[in-house]
Length: 301
Image 1 (cartoon, rainbow, N blue to C red):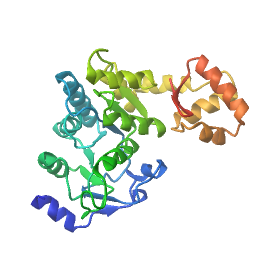
Image 2: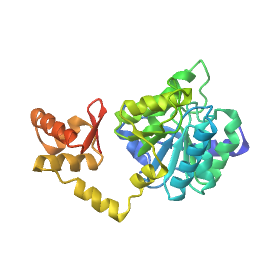
Image 3: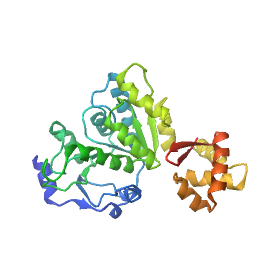
Image 4: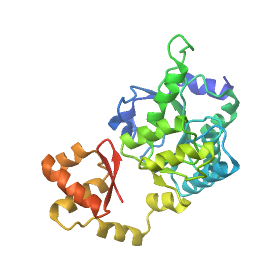
């Protein structure tokens, strides 16, 4: 452990998710972390954020997409969230840092066991530039004794997606861990983008599978930039799109626009029964106003 991280650790940086605006969103995800241990500074307020994750062995194309996207969203003030892993994760962190922006690294190991060790300098740079390296695993846990590494890497993915407004997968194989992150994101009602690719390339098959399952195809950086930073014209257009043909349609569209994606929660907010909900949602889907995310989760078109 470096001197920097040893000193940070002595300050006993820990926080419950509900104690900060930026992490409070984790209260709404399945299996909320009881405590977060961290180096650096957690943003004082809730900022727009993008999770960028993917294969550990990307092609040059995947590297370029991840870097450019991270750079552009960070330059505009959004936080880039990733997992400090080799490949797409580290490239996303570096893109955000090169833009002078903030990035958050969520570890799948105890906070005092930065992994991979080769990325310790990157972790230090994240902290020095005002970002944060965090884990739900307290310091002092030992491998194969108090936790199981593979399980923890998958479990931390729910935190990566939970902290983000949008999750983007530039490249991933069918069995990539980033697809696990995408699955959490869809369950959490987050918007998921995947970069479509060559149907014969192994690192495109995971992304193409996600698109087939309901993820949005990323056709350009503006797909994400426009969603996070809509222009006045786009906002007016969105407002018009929230007007349905009936009062109930409008109420449902407005509920989804505010971030409520779960069908049961939408029914509760709009105060309608299951029969009317199902009928109206079917009509909205036929009218191309909404799209299903799976597991009774919904998003605007």
